[in-house]
Image (cartoon, rainbow, N blue to C red; front, top):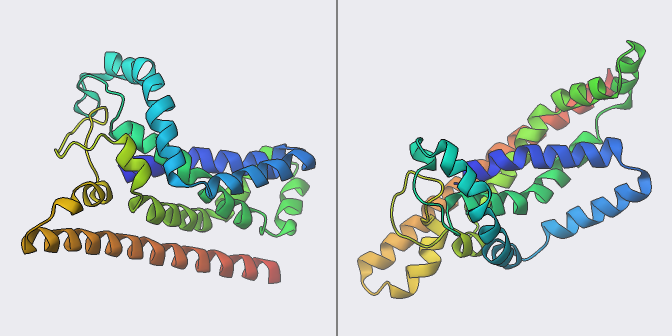
Length: 236
């Protein structure tokens, strides 16, 4: 589910970065940056409540019904759409992490040496070619930003617990309710009375810690590599 959320967040975060950095007027740019940074700091329960009360009921009768009608023959989209599901939780999570990822990508994007733009324009290429070359230049930085976003999303509890459904079952369909490790711990830890139950919850927490640490380490490597490349190009 976290992977789906990150895949949905990629076009959102990169598109927001390009719009802010390249297309919007300066006055609008400052407002959008402030809004984006504010959204990144919203309490996750706000996203969860919005997804549960507004987004979920709307998508149930529109997008989810459309997907199920025309793609329901695929196991990943089978079953009757419900108001809460893996796909809804993924979409809420994508909206939640996109401002965070976008702010990181934007900072890296703006660090690209101006000489690169001047060289591209000197070849007679236009703005969109410059944007494409800039994105290619910072691809490792983008990967690092998305890895950080994944590390944040994989441990998200409140928003996911409110929108995924809380059904303890393995479902192949994204349109079905289910549960994630953080939501499972949050919902059922209070009912763990035996030593084995408590130990299993701590083991799940350790797995989450390991996954998050691995992605944070990968993000650091990507970003350090990107910074070295920018410095090397700037000295050339």
